[in-house]
Length: 170
Image 1: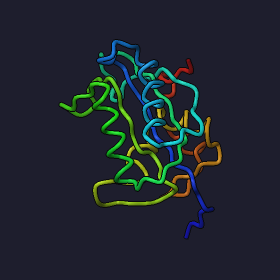
Image 2 (image 1 turned 60 degrees about the horizontal axis):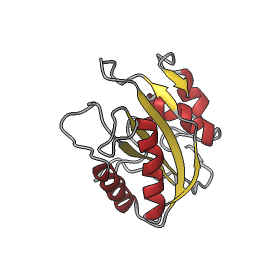
Image 3 (image 1 turned 90 degrees about the vertical axis):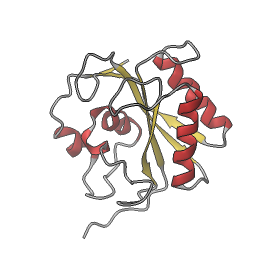
Image 4 (image 1 turned 135 degrees about the horizontal axis):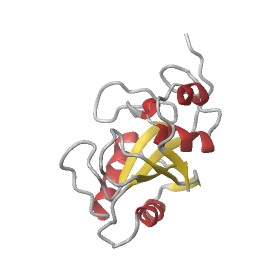
């Protein structure tokens, strides 16, 4: 049995690799998206550095700009995810196929350590532990973070990732 310390943080992942409808670069889009979230009642407490990362799976898409933000909010996970999708829509995100290039991607990575394996919101994000573009910036914000399901520390998760060459700090 894994005993987890109490967790009160919410982490969201941010990514973009296309210019947005507002005509700004992916990095500018991510920064503007954080501003929009702040205006919607979500307090952005901290943000990781931005990273340039290769697309997953590898493709001929442009590299992504990725980061993680620690936020606080009184919204439920469902309402928060709906807000993240609304912000994506505001920036011109259109969902056609999985793993496509995108103007903005906002993911709910961890909601106060909650675990949900069914329903409209899966927590923690089901692929977060397999993604360097999530774990590396998350480690910048929360080096003590442990996966809510396995209890593994972030350094152990990162050590298992197959390809770290595609992650470069901006």
